[in-house]
Amino acid sequence: MLSTVFFGGVVVVASVLAAMTGLVVARRLIPLPVRERHTAATGTIYAAVYVMFGLSAGFSLFSVWQQFNTARQTTEAASVEQIHRLAEGFPEPGRGRVQQLAESYVREVVEVEWPLMAQGRSSPRAEALLDDLRRGVQGVEPRTDAQDALRTQALAALDELEESRVLRLVLVREGLPSILWVVLVVGGALTIAFPFLFGIDAAWLHAATVAGLTVLVALILYVIGVLDYPFGGGVGVQPYPFEEVLRAIGGNGGGGP
Image (cartoon, rainbow, N blue to C red):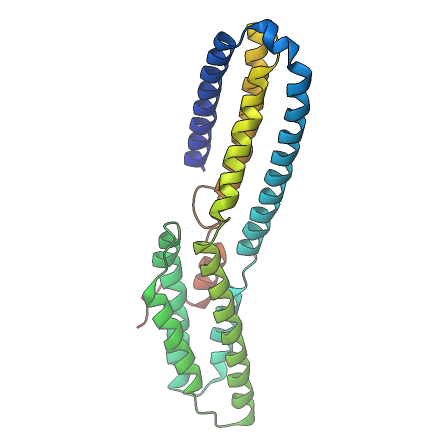
């Protein structure tokens, strides 16, 4: 969290310094009388620019927030716990193998895959353990109708688990399209730059206006960038549900296969 705040501060400060540099250059190159004569026309064009930027930023922020919310509400951990619980009714040796594989999968996700996701990667071993878990459930030989029903429920939970895992990995690897980022950055730059042309005589007032606008634009773009990667950074989604499941199903012991 502290690193996110720190980098956010760096982005804002760097943006303000760049904007102040541009403002100084603009005030020196374009005399005040020229800027005053064209303020009305410039303001009309600026209104269209900031409306278009506002719409683009609002759409992007809504999109990444939905993505972030989806990442927080994944049901993958609950499906693993359900499979482990259903396996209690399996005959041996299937019961022990399925429960061990379920615990090993959760441990691999928490200890190995989650840190990798911050880099846009996943764990091949977690994928292999999930495949072994499916084979383990499919390999159970029910001796009663009740055990057969439990096996059917476990297979259904496995389907939900695999679907949730695919969704999680998609959110890891895919964000806003590059072309949209181009629109956001260019729109943000134009939104900040257009006020350079306003006919404001007092330098301090002109600087304060541009600085305030720059802080707002930089913060909006930074927040969009942070939320675009829901499993990375200080405000990223944490593996708390998996950690709870790991504690519930036998947490502190050694892993399985």
